[in-house]
Image 1 (tube, one colour):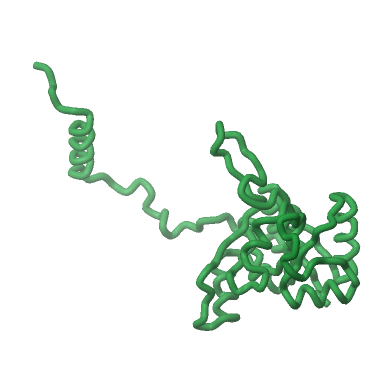
Image 2: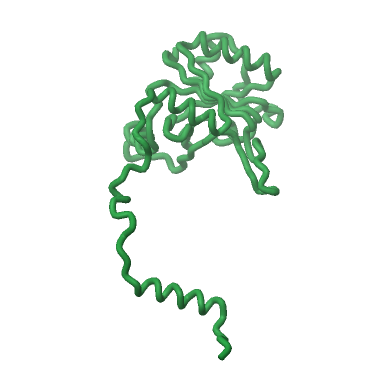
Length: 214
């Protein structure tokens, strides 16, 4: 006799049968097992490895002079001329070393580089945590082809939960309404499953970790 049930009915029948059958849990200790392997490396090394794995660039600097020297090398390498920085703390820092930058959004459509701070660096996945509390806003980390992040060593943490704890310690009950993680340059594989960097944002991400930000 021909079975007239539809493919959908057959699928639902299999699901009902599976739900009625009792089976032993094949992974009894799954919830208690650690999600990640134990990390014994310094956080700087773990973050650098994970950031590099997602096509980001990590640069460690001992102090402000070391940072400026690296910035001058990058500016010469990429022929940067339109460098924007909107955060007062960073503006004072760059001005101290007479590094040229744009303080306003004049001619922003020609921006080549955006320099911003961050809330935290997540070593486990090489991510940069940012919020809407930044004076740079979202434009400076999205529009220019190159995004430069400056972070202190005190902002480097292992996991996302540690990053959220930094936010709680900093803002108390006034947690920012927008919290985001930047993991490497902008990317997409929507077109023929071919990975393209810089499709919806910066094609280069540089993270400077400065030991003595002064």
